[in-house]
Length: 247
Image (tube, rainbow, N blue to C red; front, side, top):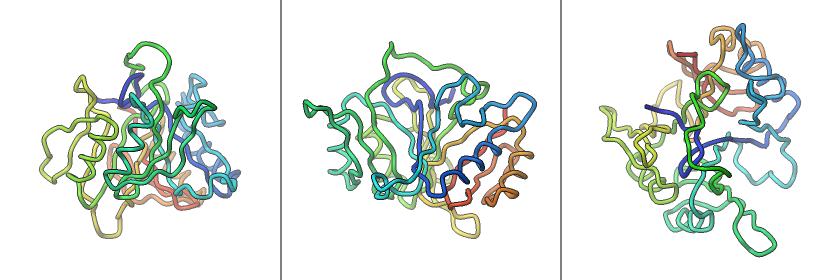
């Protein structure tokens, strides 16, 4: 069983980016993510239930120091502890939001390979599965390609609390939450013409994959890697994300 979208430690309920050329980016994703007879995404980039799963913000001066990549928000038991461990393990703290009392509310971190992500407290409500990810416009999977899989896996084990399944034939590792459900994977970085940077790829389901890929090209994006079940694309400002066909 797999799916990163759930309420609880290690769960990913949302992701965001602060992008230049904001209006062009918004139009690009609004077209690419809204294919099929029953689109899983609305043109305002909320999902079909109206939930703000991904956020596309303008790259204002406040956010210019953030890397240009989609950043998943991972729920952790203690934001300050996770941020401190990230730095101790060779990562970086990029931003850290605190309340008036000094309590950590959220943080934006980068792992040793440069992949950025946010850490937030567990969402309100009891720990529970947030439902099937493929039918309701949610983040369906996460993947990361790096040069040193064991080192980066250990980083996330200590910072986020994910555990790993045994290594696959190519040396990759599937990341799992405490109950064994897989949330994503870390794989060895490929070379060649379809090299993907070491960033967290959000895998987003679309209603019509072929139509979405046509819209990627028409909108000034690029299809970097394509397979039957999905594709990695690069948007007009150079940011990578993955599109996934419905199962």
